[in-house]
Image (cartoon, rainbow, N blue to C red; front, side, top):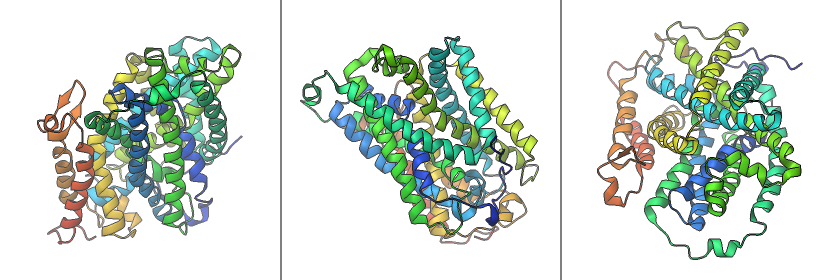
Length: 455
């Protein structure tokens, strides 16, 4: 039986570091090459974009969003700590709780939505009620997260191979018998829905920011930033772009037959004789990222709560307890919220984007441009240390980074900023959420802050 991981939110000692950056390609390819990515791709057509420009938005959005995502990955080998622990250096040990709470909500939302789809597939395999299948799927996910880092990477490699085989077959089945020339002809460019689709696909990558160092922190400290970046970037962009393109074409060809029936439609492409094998493939394909959601989610919850207890590590029993509590909460959300899945999911992605982009900008500027990859690890766990309890500078920049997006925000049917109509409804808020906090934080860090902890 695989050994249960003993490390939690504490730094990984040099003697326990292992592996090569290339393992990150398979993990992040598998995490993206799955049914939820296809659902996100379908959204690019759902917002009113022609399939040609939907595919362009998929490629460009992933290419852009993958850059900060992969830059976060390089933080793992250098520091050997979970991603959100490192945020204490920017916001202060207590101040980091603010982005942490939002990240916990993100993990819960993604885990719940993934468990709905995985549970539907499991129900099709076993003929068990959907709600029971959701609970079972959540339990299996929690078990894998308890076993931890080594199992996650090994499963990621196997899931990558399976994903390629399944999606090659499904892609051929999808386009067979259809006139793609007719579908892709007459492409008219419409800027507002293109920018909205771009923000949806970019947000997919940007929301991986809080995850990615968690999965690279066991790599040797000597692992280069270049290697970590490119292996992560290649896996995440290729996997997501392929799966999202599949989803965009599926929605363009099938419409209502795909919307709301994503798993049934995908499995139906294989014909009656392959229903069970494809349901198994869907369930396993979703499993990788679902485990990552629990794995990162429990560490974010633990990071939040241990802020005030000053604990730098969890016992094995404590770690298992955090995993189980998180999985139970996520399963409950999945059972209660599996109604209008597609619409709820797009709203969830848009909401997260406004709050996570300023955090990502501050975190990356601090790591690469302000502190140049040098941190005092012990101080990350000590409110009385050099990073202090609160860093008003980072918190104010973060708040401004959220506020500056509001006039440009356009959350379909929920909120429209007053400047968005002047741009034809186009949503460019996420770009401002990245650029404005990055520039402002860098400029503020050029001047010493009175009473602030040393950089």
